Length: 358
Image (cartoon, rainbow, N blue to C red; front, side, top):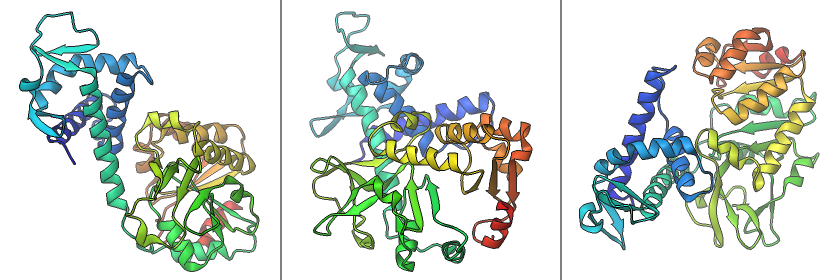
């Protein structure tokens, strides 16, 4: 259920983010759902005391009056009622310890957390609903097939930030030997997280989903993430019995807080392990705007003069103009560390890419 105030708070946060970027270094920045999610999540975590953030707290204190004006109703015991009817007037009173005082109304800390939790849940649910349909096989199967049959390659490591199942569906349909870190359980009803599958030499494609997937969920009985058996894409809208929260990372900078927990420890350990073994990295479909991922890439790139990034994109200058400032500056200062293949993934050939790997 979407509460009446949820969309209004989302619009309010979006407006604040847009004003920030217009005032600072990116006047044409397009706010995404991840920006809004990040701000709501930081307020929520700060209010809970999990990650106290003085800057967020200061922002929230300054804007609480405006946000109360935005909130038309508040959810309480399954009823939406007018805010003024359930909040006592306590103008100027200091006796309510642990409460926020704004516009003459008493707003409990629980209510603040509840409001922002519902904003977070709304964004998560809409994201999952938008990508949880059976995946359409993408029109790049030719290049994936040419990579797969290339006998010069021992195995192929693929790191993606996407939450959908497009690649799994393609690989499964084509009959490719691949692993995404899960093993089928004894009765064939679930696949359970097992990072040792990434060491299996008979798997040509190793698929690492660094930000998780909408089909992954933590399972209390197995004490780790589980997902559906491969090929059962018609079940993607269903709920795994016994499963809890989705193992999925959304947001901006605060995603890095999760890199050191749960299955993401395994994923990022493999990411760094693979990076340290290579001198050239092929990048396609990434905008260089994720600070956590960028930190890994920058550290890897500058540690060795021979290392280069091959970027498949029709307009590298435009891509870097929209990248994070740190990566944009790196590209400007060390332009020779980047090789551009000016095509889209749909039109580039494996032969073209492979020539740039030599």
